[in-house]
Length: 243
Image (cartoon, rainbow, N blue to C red; front, side, top):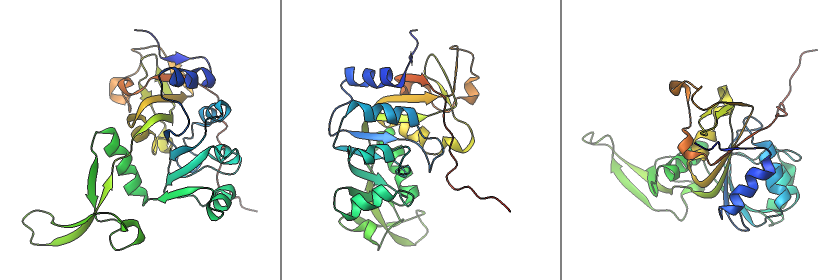
């Protein structure tokens, strides 16, 4: 089996272009939560391609000079589908000025929309957001749940999310693309990895195919098209110290 490893983030991104999964206007799935588990070097390589009018699906948008904040600086993002974006002043300004379209989601709903997309599920119903702005313009139905309970409740329909390209961050990978995440850096990455035509994983360690314990693999290599090894910066989002 040919190894899926590429020598640089730029080479991995170029592989996505050759696979016709990188162009202006595409939807990009990006893992990470706050500054934890961010595919930071892949985001930089994506920025350097100059692609524009992107729709980015990510829990948040990094900070002003890191993560997806770099793509906001260069105005390469047209729309964000997100949950929490409170740490990014550039995001705030572009949104208020009408330069950036934003689709907000409850955090659990966003995770399930991505998971559904990866599972081939076009839509699902959830009680989260019923009666709020989240439900405006969406189909709402009443269901008896659990079945036979006699209790009916309103649910809003949400659609699955799927992209041309996914950028994820893992701890360890092998040549087949099998991934292991470390602690909270797992966050949104496993769902994002399944929900795109072409998925690139940025990892800290690379091992030979067959050396990973199958019971420890979080994302099977079947979902991964390219792997690149980088040295992460590992920033701390909110540093608190005692005097």
